[in-house]
Amino acid sequence: MHAYRASLLRFDAAGQPLFDTDGLLVVGPDAQGRQRVQDAGAHAEVAARHPGVAVTHWPGRILAPGFVDMHIHFPQTDIIGAPADGLLPWLENYTFPAESRFADPAHSAEVAEVFFDELLRNGVTTSLTFATSHPQSVQAFFEAAERRQLRMITGKVLQDRHSPDGVRDRTEQSLVDTEALIRRWHNQGRLGYAITPRFAPTSTDAQLRGAGELAAKYPDTWVHSHVAENKDEVKWARELFPQARSYLDVYAGFGLMRERAVYAHCIHFDDDDRRLMRDTGTASAVSPTSNLFLGSGFFDFEGADRIGYRYGLASDVGGGTSFSPFATMLAAYYVGREGQTKPGVSIAPSQLWWRHTGGAARALGLDGVIGNLQPGCEADFLVIDPKATPLLARKTGLANNLEELLFSLIVLGDDRLIERTVISQTG
Ligand code: GUN
Ligand code: ZN
Figure 1 (tube, rainbow, N blue to C red):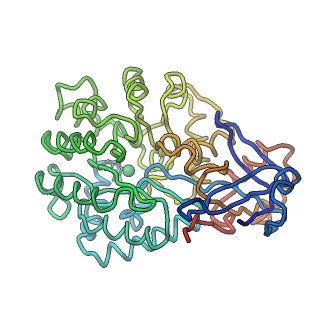
Figure 2 (figure 1 turned 30 degrees about the vertical axis):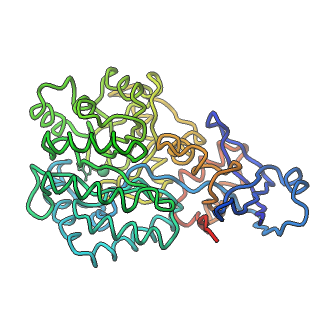
Figure 3 (figure 1 turned 90 degrees about the vertical axis):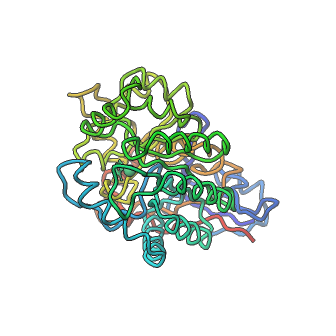
């Protein structure tokens, strides 16, 4: 066992923040040797329960849960900031050419390392991740994640039509490859598999049906796709699947909505779509920097909360513009405020933070496993230096309460705030 003394940020079961200015986090191995939180809270109380435990003291620092990125594309690391008139030209001109290079296992392995370095520098300890249609890209990702003992989720992209040579896969083989990768990697240590149809327009009915069958056969895998991001995309999906009530309903029809199914964007929704999300236990990955960069639209936070379905925050790199959760939380605040196309809301800083940690974990079906620092959680945590820059030092020193402190970090913060990212190890 080992204990860490600093300020401590956690969340209660309702997602409300718990903050100890002088806190103590006690970490130790479970029966399998995995490092987990054993105790957490005010130093005076927790220290008394653990006499003799060695303590590392980080004065002036904040211990916080590792961030959870609910939707990101590791093969798009090199195309952040690629200009385009919108989603569909961006895919054609930048994304598909970049992804075609992942047929090469050496390129896949090299980018996977860059990707994990970047996530960890930014304090992201788990991501639900798109690979490419090449099984080699999944293999490279999982091998690198396993070496680093990270809790990571990915899957081979399914796209058997309306895709250029180099990324288009073949229906039958794509499903065989998916099942083989599930058997090889799902629940191997902390790794998880996501069945990953790119989006309905690039899959045939047969591929979507096969994906749905695998989702039923392996119910604790994830399902990961995109929906209702961009108006041209929505129009295209409606033309391709005229029998469905809505674009989202296409996925329901193929058995691709359930707990642990996660859809990026979910912007151009009506209340029937929101109810379908809620009633099936499906979650949204809200990707505000991407939506602003590609001009896709504004996620309706009021609608999501009014109907009551699960969602969390995501970078969507490379449509998204930053690996930093601080950039994503700030953009989510801006998108929430937008009140011309939907009700404008002010999301509390602690709620932005929860949607990128404990709330994202809950949306992924990993509540109590990651995204928090309550007893039992895996010990993936951050050491944050709230005085990492001169302006932050001045501003955080003026904070009167927790919400003001968190807002200063969200508005002014970036990777310089993350002094250390600690990953739960075994043995
Ligand atoms: N829809 C289908 N593929 C993609 C992608 O790679 N990025 C985004 N943002 N949307 C998509
Ligand atoms: Zn995406």
